[in-house]
Amino acid sequence: MFINASLIVQMIVFLILVGFTMKYVWPPIIKALDERAAKIAAGLSAADKAKAELAGAEAQIAKELAATKAESGKLISDAEKRAAAIVDAAKGRAEEEGAKILAAAKADAEQQVSRAREALREQVAALAVKGAEQILQKEVNAGVHAELLARLKTEL
Image (cartoon, rainbow, N blue to C red; front, side, top):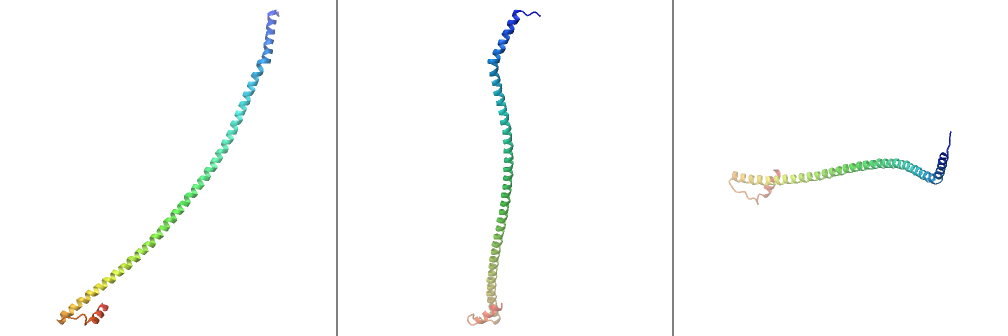
């Protein structure tokens, strides 16, 4: 092999370039790559941490949702019980009111029957007196025969 001077000069220039690159160019590139690798690692670490926090938050949400469902079910059950109690109380009051109205109606009916009987007795007594007048062909004095008329009324 024949090595000439241009090849030696090219090798020297290449070695100077490699030395310059190793001293001044390569360290900032390595530093930038290391920083980027650190940022990527930190990002991956943060992503893993965020996934763990998300899983924890989802578990907490599920727990709170279950508690809320249980509480709402209890509230609905309590509301249904209160509604049933209110309906029962209203039924009781309505029955009491109905019984009062029925008793008042019965008392009123009894009073009306008593009045009707009394009016009927009065009419029967008046008819009996008229009948007696016609039979006897003379007038019956109510003042004189009051005791007889009162006894007749009580018998009717």
